[in-house]
Each structure stands twice: as C-alpha cells, then as structure tokens.
Amino acid sequence: MNLAFKLDRIAARADELRALLSEGVSGETFTKASKEYAELEPIVERIAELRAAERAREEAEALLADPEMKELAEAELQELKDRIPGLSHEISVSLLPKDEADARSAILEIRPAAGGDEAGLFAAQLFGMYQKYAALRGWRFEILEFADTELGGVKEAIAEITGKNVFARLKYESGVHRVQRVPATESQGRIHTSTVTVAVLPEAEEVDVQIDEGDLRIDVYRASGAGGQHVNKTESAVRITHLPTGIVVAMQEEKSQHKNRAKAMKILRARMYEQQRAALHATRSADRKSQVGTGDRSERIRTYNFPQGRVSDHRINLTLYKIDRVMVGELDEFVDALTAEDQAARLAAEQ
Image (tube, rainbow, N blue to C red; front, side):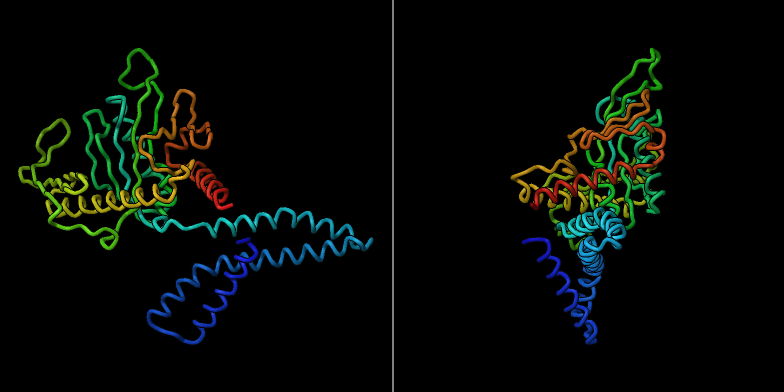
C-alpha cells in the first residue's frame, strides 16, 4: 500500500470519527472514538501540512514560466525541497506500529558484572546517572531496592521511574555498560575495565500478567545490611519465587514485610511481562534482528572511558567527548540518536 493511499484512508477515518463525535454519542462508543481520534489528529494535521506544501510546489512550478515570477518561485521551491521530504518522513514514522509499552513507566535494575569492587562502584554511579536523568525529565524516581557495599558501591539497585513515555526513552539502555578508568582502590595507577548490567522493564499492571497465588513460593527472613550485619530483628525481608518460570525476586528495603511483598510483586509482574514481550518480539522478528533496542542484557552497548573523557555507544557508533555531562544525566543526545536509528531500521523493513 503506497503512502498516498494510506494518508487518504487516515484522513477519511478522521472525518468519520469527527462526524460520529459531533452526533453526541456516549458511553463506550464515545470513549473509543475520542481515543482513536486523539491518536489520529496529530497525523491528520501533518497530512494537511504535507498536502498544502505539495499544492504550493505545483503552483510554484507553474510560475517558473513567468519571467517576472521566476525568481520568487525558485526561492519557494528551494524552501519546499526540504520541507516536503521532512513532513513525509515525520508522517511515515508516526505510522510505524506502536509499542504499547512505550508510554509506560519503567523498572530500572542495575547490577555489577565483571570487575569486583570497581564494578560495584560504577553500578552506583550509573544508578545516580539515571536518577539525575529522571529529575531532568521531570519523572518520579523511587528506589525499590538498594543493596550497597562497604566501599559505597552496590550489589543490586532497583528503582521505579514514573512518568510519561519513560519506557520509550529508557528502553535502549538495557545491556552491558563497560567502564575503563583507574579505580580509587588501585595504587599503581593502572586502567581497569569493569562491566555493569542494566535492565529496563516496562511497568506491568495486574491486568497484563495473571499470577496464580498457587504458583508462588514466598519466603520471609531477617533483612541484613552491608557486610552481613542484621539491621532488624523481625522477618521483614521477602523472597518470592514464581515456580513455573523460576523468576525470583527478593526485597528487604522496607521495614514492613507487607511493603516489601508489594514491591516484590511489582518487580515480578514487570519481569514476567517483559518475558512475554520478549517471546512475542522473537516470534515477530525471527527473520531479522533489529540493530537497536534488542534488550539483550548480554550485549555490550556502551563504553565509558574516563581517562579520555569519552562515552561511546557501540550500536550506532556515536562517541561523545563529554563524560562529565553524561554522568550527571545528560543522556538525551544518545537517546535521540538511538530512537532515530531504530525508526530508520523499522522504516527500511517496511519497504
């Protein structure tokens, strides 16, 4: 189906919905129609802009034969030369299949991988980087679990990030993040390489994932702090095992067993939902692997080289020499480039 035909159908559907809503329908019919119209309206506005630009181009081309108007027509055609392809691209991107998880909030999970204490220290720094990014975007950042080490690193850090389009902005962060620097614990001044795994999961609602209580094994135990010392005498920590999938979530951040259980269930739902999404994605794209945003946690996606002051994203070959700005949450340049690359790959696949 060519683009012009698609645009005609969208404009016609918007007209149908506009007429339906003006008839004063109510209830579920109104809700569905108004939601669909709200999704189509921005696209229809862009279509109207494109059509107007195409008409202007035809008029300007007709004026080229008039010696008095030729210069003016050429100037207008030059302007339209960039505008029309830009509008067409914008509309094509808006017509790509939507990932319904994009608008959701997200669960962020960070764990040190290779590199011992230095990996734990960098994991803590990455966690802080995302916390600062959330603040810059106006999102709410709530720590669900933060198991720290005696040196100030983390063994595991989990947060819930709440806001509009959180998952859409952060989904490309899943994978292995590598750091190259001289650790504070290194007396010889040698550069070490360490790795940290990051997982970003779309937050799941109860309706998304059906969990049978009979499939859960719930263990309670005493919470312990860094170094193994007990931080309370009650069995407030909770470990939930989903027996059919083997997914295990442990939570001890809160002093209340009830709160720890609620947080653990939230993470369990997110992990199960992501597992379902991954299976669906694998089925849909069995014939091709997307270059960006596969979510593969074993994939090395980015290197932070402190001696050289650079951050390199290996999926899109983008290197920024401003590691200090990146570490205080200025991630939009990477996020925008990754989003554009993913859109380009999907547009190419649609051809």
